[in-house]
Length: 340
Ligand SMILES: NC(=O)c1ccc[n+]([C@@H]2O[C@H](COP(=O)([O-])OP(=O)(O)OC[C@H]3O[C@@H](n4cnc5c(N)ncnc54)[C@H](OP(=O)(O)O)[C@@H]3O)[C@@H](O)[C@H]2O)c1
Image 1: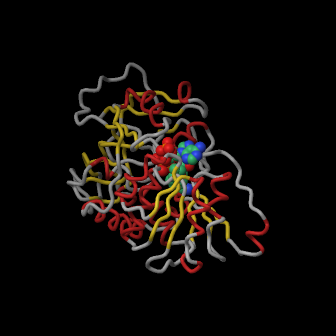
Image 2: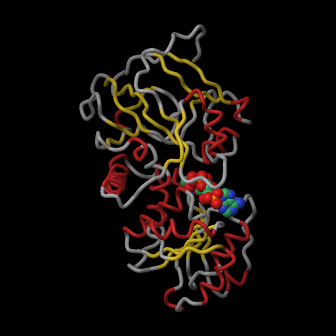
Image 3: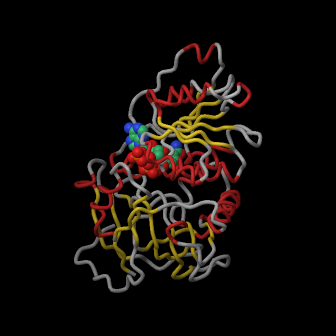
């Protein structure tokens, strides 16, 4: 089978580093499956990886794409738990391709009828939000969590999953016009950063947030830390503003605030496939019962990847940008030269 794939040949600007290549895929070997990919989002982590600035870099050439969903075309010898037509999450890399091989043991099985755009986004933003809310500290029902970049994909998942877990969210955004939309999504309070200090003064001491989720860094990250109850945890998982977080000693000495980082990848790697399957099963249930929705702003075909990447870098989006792969890839012309 031939497939078009987005291959990273050097780290740098997408215009010169990322190339659309047609490759021939071998038949699945023992324990492998052949997948036709359905959809794959474009995440900030993908863009960092292309530039060579991500925490984990592949050997080049490599197929880009952190997250995606595919449907099984054929199973290799010895694969009994999966079958043709199954919808699966094939891992955490190499997703920007129309078809690929995967190890059956690494795949997470999804309900066949699950919406492919929800399925394609389930392992990054929702898992990050879920693990940040549940694995760092045990928050009693009704506890407040404060976060910035509340309109981001992760921020929206924090709002929705916190609601499922009966936690309350204090959400900081940089655009006041998002307020109604995020309240409707389940946010308890939505404010712009300038109002954070005044808002927190209205909180009873006992209700102050014990967990802050910082995706922005710089002054915004510090503002979150100032809202925390003594002993609270400040978790940095992104650095969107590219400004360093400066921590005043008073927060360490008098309030004993704990500053930590979070990286979904290291969490993912520390779990077995069965443990990952169990968490994803919970997230899928929330998607299916309407408690969790992962918005899409636009989808692009693979050949328009430069347009898609530039759209993904625009501000004020209403959802993710995804690559959507065609259903019939048998028509792809045989390449005139060979790669790999
Ligand atoms: N550590 C981990 O495991 C992990 C996992 C997933 C994501 N992340 C990180 O989390 C962050 C969010 O990712 P995502 O995929 O959820 O993002 P996304 O959906 O692409 O959204 C980006 C958000 O950032 C906001 N924003 C952009 N520039 C900003 C600035 N200078 N100050 C404040 N807000 C700004 C945007 O606000 P507007 O809506 O107003 O434009 C938007 O809400 C990224 O840094 C990503 O790398 C980390």
